[in-house]
Structure formats: C-alpha cells, structure tokens
Length: 132
Length: 132
DNA sequence: TCTTTTATAGTATTATGGTACCATAATACC
DNA sequence: GGTATTATGGTACCATAATACTATAAAAGA
Image 1 (cartoon, rainbow over the protein chains, first blue to last red):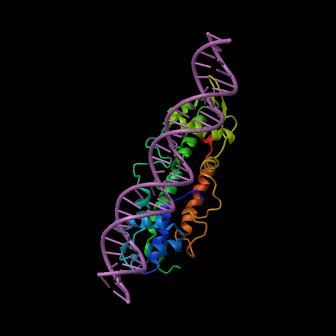
Image 2: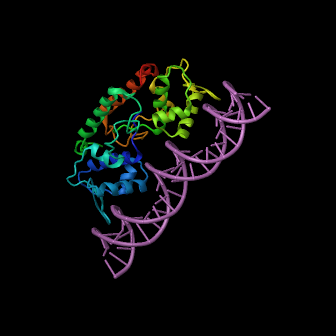
Image 3: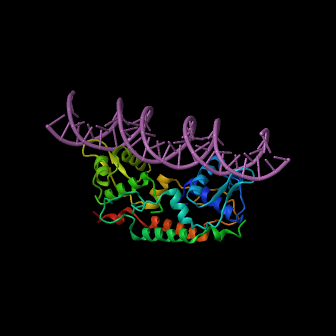
C-alpha cells in the first residue's frame, strides 16, 4: 500500500459505511467502534466533527446514537473534511513552488491523482446499503 | 492534491533529482537544501539515511558533499526506504482485517494503487539528467 | 600545523495526530 | 423524579515526525 489515509479518515469512512448498512437506525458510538475495531474515544471525536459538518445526525440518551437521515455524501467530501482540501498544493511532495522547471513526477502522476479523485467522488454512502 | 507524501520523501526525491542534474559532482547539503527550499537540518538527516542505504555517496571536508556515483535508483525504492514498505497492509485505511465483507473502496482503488506503484518504479534518477 | 568546510551523530525541541479521561447535557425509561 | 445511557466538550497525555542544536570526525588548503 503506497497510498495511506489517516486513522481519522479510516474511522469516518468505515463508521459511516456501517451506518449506511443500518438504514437510518441509531447506532451508538460504542457499537460502531466495536464493529470497525477502532478506539472508542477517537471515533466519538471524529463523529462529532461529522455531525457538525452535517454528514451524520445524532441523538443523545438511551437508544440514541448516530444515524444517517437523508445524508448521502460521497467519499471525497468526507476526505476533504478530515484530510483538508489543499487546493493550493499542486504537488504531492507538498511544495507550493517547484524548485525544478518541470515536476519530477510528471503528468503521469497528475493523471493518477485525478483518477483517485474521480473514484472518491463516485463512491457514495448509499452504494453501501446492501453490505454486511 | 489527495495523495500526499511525507516531507522526508519530498526532500529525498527533490534532493536526489538535483544531484542527478549535477552528473556526479559533489554538492553540499547546504546547497541542496537551498536549491529545493528545505530545512537544512532535516535534509542532512534524510541524506544520512540515503547514504547508509547506498542510494547516494558522500564525502566530508571542503569541496566535499553528496554525490551520485553509479547509483540509479527508481523512485519506488526511495519511497519504500522513507515511507516504509507495509506489504502487510492491503488497505489504504490501515486495517489489517477489514470489518466488512468487501472493501468499501473496492477494486477500482487497488488499480489506482497499482498504477502509482508502476509509475514510481518506472521513474529513475537517470531520467532527470537533462533537467534544470 | 592550523583553519575552514563538510558530513556524522546524538540529543532536544516542537508540532501534530491519535488516544484517554472527565465533567456535562440531553433523553428514555422506570 | 431518579437512573441509566448516550452524545458533547474540554483538556491532557502519548507517540511520532519534523526540526533544531551541539559536538565530533574527516578532509582540504594555506
């Protein structure tokens, strides 16, 4: 694996995916964490951010939890939310201005990047409904 | 930019690329750092690792520096050296065993991953000789 | 031999992401 | 109303990566 996402993004996507299989049912952070084998504390924090961003809904109290209402975000949205957008950067190596005339990774890399973006944009939570 | 490499890898690739344009000439860490706009201290550390790994050669003293002898590594080698291999992981989300029956990112992602690997393997320092 | 330049090495500092802990607020159920 | 359950929020801790600092070793040149 060359492309590696952050722990937070992993938790968000897997957790949301689990919710998606539950069709609007409210699921506690505890249960989600157990299902996707994540640290409960971290998951709560991540999901707080998702709630604030409107990606997921929540209700407190017994039989409360997190749930998906009509939200059907694509993965790219979640990605940007947790990893940051960084539209400024046009270099995977994090440079704002390249020290060389032409990028040492070249256009082939830009194409791969674009493919990944399209993929993440095409994947939606609603695609995961039938999962287990 | 969705795919983001570490600072260390950026420094290594750009620094090596600069050396590649210099055709075996010895260049001080100071000059390399200035050229690629990197922190000098960090660059020295990174290049120490590259020397130990045999990717680049070095000589101390005045008119010393780092230089490429016959080394013509591909980018994938440098990548693995600095980012780690992680053959164990078959998931960009860092899970060793998926909580779901099928990966939520699917095969499309694996293909992109493979394309990136091929790209990095195909790029070599010798490709950069004519650069500026 | 002395000085300067350079890499090497060890360690310390800083920033960040992940994790843990604790108090609080909301809600359901008895 | 009391209690249990759950999300929320704040803060603190820990590991790691990036960065900085300091001392040392090697080599060149005067």
